[in-house]
Length: 71
Image (cartoon, rainbow, N blue to C red; front, top):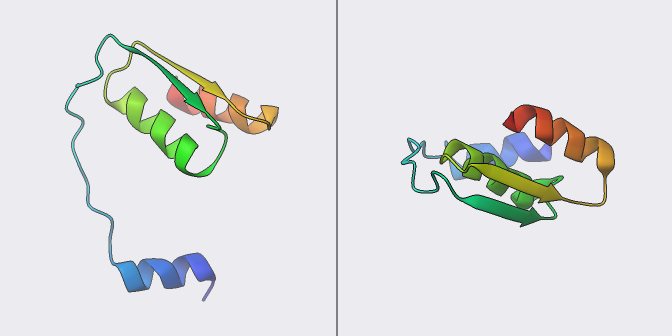
C-alpha cells in the first residue's frame, strides 16, 4: 500500500460539496496552481462558476494540463 492510499485509509473519504456558484462572474488568480493545493483551488474556483481562472506556476506542462481540465 502506498503512502497516499494509507493517508486516505486513515482520514476516511473526503466530503463532497455541491458547487454553490458563489464565484459566478468573478475573475480569479491562483499563483502556484500547477500542483497541490493551488491546483485544487483553481479547479474549485472553476467549479464555483468563476468567469476566468488565471493560473501561474513554474511547470508549463502541468499548467497547460490544468488549463485543459478547467476548460
